[in-house]
Every structure is written in structure tokens, then in C-alpha cells.
Length: 298
Image (cartoon, rainbow, N blue to C red; front, side):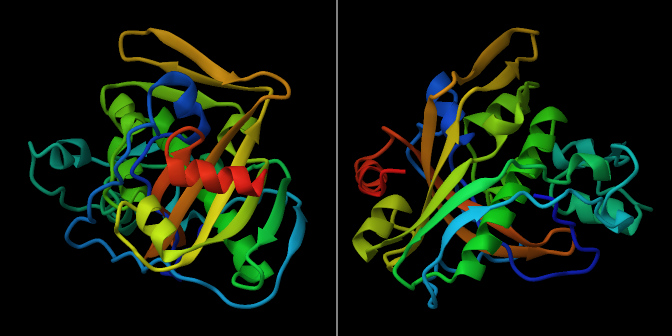
């Protein structure tokens, strides 16, 4: 995806998820099959903007993956660097660390115990095919912004899944939790190949207020836009438990994993506008989501 994380506070971000790692969860019983969405945001967090509709033109096409560029170093580092005292503070066994740099404080505010290496948080997705099926409710530019932010979200989640950062995953979910978070919190590590980490195609779809109420666990009864995505095999995902047990997951060539995302936006000084995934519905996870995925026929 190749976007740079801004150095200064930016615009808001979309998406918070109360489930676990999209399509791969359905393959493993580890995740997105749990029904509810995550809890509310913690005190002091920027409030997520309400689920909204957009208006402008219809768009369709394939978005090429921009060439990756290294983000400004103001909010990342040359290598992963532990924040002194952060782990004890976040675990409730220590006081708030003192004498932190602004960068360290910014990541601690997002419940991270490390400042990530810049090279690890630059998205590197394959091209993604997009279809805008909103009949003018969502503009081409807004759809592309969502795709870019979605790819950033999963790059950050991938880093967190490899570096014992369950609190940061929860932050990205707007305070929600899921089995992926639990797996990482228990000392597990998740490493995905590129095609399992990112979607290869997305449809933007309008939904009614009744559908949104069902999809967002009654957090919103307003009509809006949701996103149906698919990962296409071959791809691999490796889940390594704290005891060293390794479980391989993924898709064979020609196989697809589908999901439906309900998202909103938030902002942080580090990430600027980023996604909060309110809910992720895997295929077979819910009647309303399955009906929408079937109609879209991605």
C-alpha cells in the first residue's frame, strides 16, 4: 500500500473490529466466528466517528499497489525498540513510565510496549480489484481512501501479531477484542504471507438501517456503506503458540476467504486518520452478512 504514517496529528481514521483475523479465523476456529462486536473505547481515546454514508460518483476498477516508501521517522524507529516500563504499566503492575520521548509516549498511548521499526509498518499489498456498488453513495476517492487505510490497518495488526502487542491490536479495534488478540496475549505469534494478510478484491455495498443494526450489533441503525472483501489462495498463515505449537492455515490455489467489514474512523497523532474495524463477518458467520455477500457475488 505504500502509505506513510504522518508525523503530525492527521485526519480521523476508519474501522474497529470486535472479531479476529478475517478469513483465516474461519479456517481455524480461532476468531471472527465470535458474534459480538468489541466494547466501547477507553477513556482518553479519540471517539470513533459514527458510521456514515457518502455521496458522489460511482466507481469501479483495479487499484495498483503504490510503491512502498519509508514513513517519516518521527513516529517510528530504525528498529523495534522497547518502551521502558510500558509492559508493567499496561499490565497494571507499574506506574506510568517517566522521561519517555514524545515518540515513546505516543505509542504507549496506543497501548503498545514498543516503538516499531519504520520498515515493518509500511504496507506492501498486492493490487486490489475494487467494485463500487453503492450507486453514488460512496465516491471513488472515498473508496480508495478506505482501501488504503484498510491496508495500513492490517499491516499494523500484522506487526502487532508478531511482536506481542495485544493491547495495540485492541486499540486498532476501538477497544474491542477477539480470539486473535487472546492468542497474542497468551504469547502467540501470527505471521501471514502477503496474500493472506491483504484482500485481493473489495466491493463497497450500501446497506439499510435494519441491515446495519444487525451487522453492528445494534450500535447503529443508520443506513450506510460496508465492504465485502476476499483473500485468494495460495496463501499461508502460521500461528505459533507460546508453547511452540505451530498451526498452519491458509488457502490453496483458487480458494477464497470472504468477509464483510463494518468500519468507522478515528485519529491519533501517530497514525493520522486510521480505520477502526467495528465488526468483521466471515462467510458463514451471520445471516445478514451471508445474504449481502451472496448478493454481491464477489
